[in-house]
Image (spheres, rainbow, N blue to C red):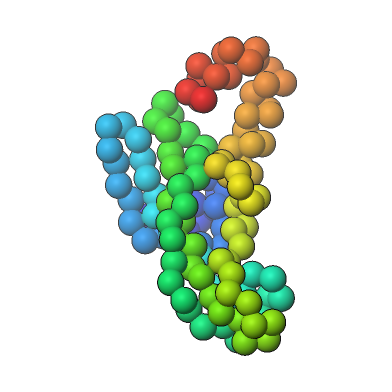
Length: 123
């Protein structure tokens, strides 16, 4: 998938696309952050210490729900001497959806009832 499609259609930027999978009508986009940077002090002097996968809901494509599965890398920062996971640009901490989906839902709620928005987005 082209990076411009991720940016212009889904509002995802700063990530490399790894692969796309589809299970039961749901689309999963696997991605990894483009740059290696520490989480807190934003240093470039980092050493990789593993990773975990985080699943986020993003804008639907037609009637199909779409999830971004982001590979969150864990780094040891040589400047601040902390081990942290990298920050996500497309969402806030502890949220299970992207900023693009949040804006889309707010726009829909301004024009539709909450029940209609919930049925449309299956949330």
